Image 1: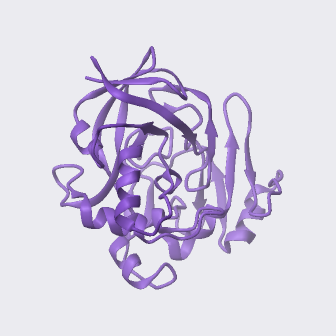
Image 2: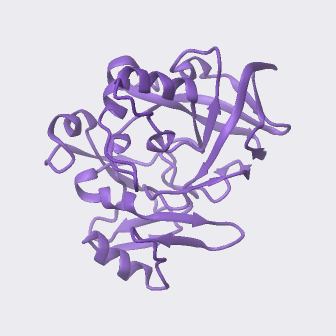
Length: 279
């Protein structure tokens, strides 16, 4: 393996409950299932049986006003928009907040699905407009133990974020949080969307962790939405829709992509500041 010049782990993020805001960590263990404690919980819509996801923003964008922190070996804590913690009656509190009967679960239902609004329609019509919504299986639905969309880990480079910021031309940096990565990699001397060229290759992160990049990450409407204090930002999707439409897997056509999905070849710890080498 050779080190890619200047690439280091800039940030580590974990999202204990799917579609909620998460937390930034200085160090974490990565298991074969991904970052320890990441997306281990989700809300289920008791009316439809589907996993609650802000990918259907007209219905569930308020989930991004909630923050989940903590995890193994401790409990997960869910905080309301005003900063108060949800107590023991979490299902009742969140049902009232979201306006629909929901239940917090750690068990991925067999054949788990979620609703995904078509992002181009959301961009054109706005997050409150009725748009086409597709029932979409979770990538690891069935025997999965986590609520990841496709692969256990998601990464994005600062080169890609800088390219999107430059092309948006608003003067506001596009925050990595909008794309919900586990690892933000600080890069130099690589082009934006460099992750596309890493598919099929291995990344050695720090002394032990080895990842295999498996696909560019197709984007939904979530990056455009308000994330806590971050306001809505349509350019977070418009720019990659214009500059980086690629087929993430052979059976799909070109889609706007940002970052990449990865599998865990060899588990291990990762810390902010770890060097990254590309096979």
